[in-house]
Image 1: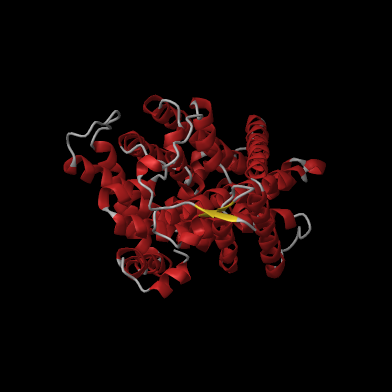
Image 2: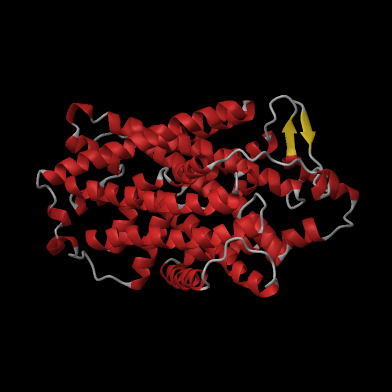
Length: 462
């Protein structure tokens, strides 16, 4: 295996300029394709469980889309003000400096990406095995083994060819859209036939338990997992054609569209399933298909499995590039910035993802709370940076400047959500904060300390 290193000590002027090839349509596809993944097939159960009623769960889905829209507007300003690829990591590093940027990278590499990858892989295995174990839960070992095989196979594909990886992504993005389209159409037919008892106001707001702010906050965390990916266009800002126009346009088109699709999908679920049936199901879309599609019920688990398979491929692709970028900037071992000479793939960074398979031992809904908390923490720090940057550099040219009420509204919601989530799930959320803070000594030893012994450089591949 031949590897080539890219020198992270090069000056910005020496770096390759990326081609601007992403137009408005492609920008919308990036946002929609990265948001719609496994979340809509697994989060409805978690949202309903914490919301306590059908009506409140639907309100959570709509409000979740609205909060994403506020965050996206802030990211649009940051994207054209700091026109660098890398998203949150680049913005926070520019605004707050290397330590905060490193902690964001550290949490993404250790928590966000691997945990999300584990959740999607578990969803894939559950849906593949559901037809085999129709009347019982799939064996624990079987789901973990199939998840591991899937991740290992797609890691090999991504190591072998960028073109193969992108072709897989294109094909399976179509599969996920077809799966959701089928669910929505069948659900609307059911409603037209009068099957919407669970959606009647008199029943929709019948709570299985007294609602609490803490449980509603956890419902929002579950929904936020399904909406994660709304900031991915900011990772490729340098490649967007006319970003001042196309970046905000793509956001204004994509976020409302995804919110509408998610809300209609949940309405479709409740047109055929009672809340009790949805909570008892380990694969909501499969249960939906078994009740309404008859002999064609096999279409649903296959469609969802294809969707999640593409999601795993997408997260492997992006997480490896984040490791690669961090190493190129000197925030991770230089070994991870090496690429294969022939295939032009970041093999060391991809192989790091394989070590995350141990995360598959956790339960899916606990993992969602885990990653959603850290995700929201990162979003809030980045948007707080927008306000700080306005104060720090008030005369900087800002092609897009949102009303100050937008970031303030987001941060108020952010603080309330994280506060009550930490109160309701102190162990899960607390562990996320502790793991993030472990990056502080790592930063000072590995990055800030410049004159390290030569043996240290040999270990990390500098």
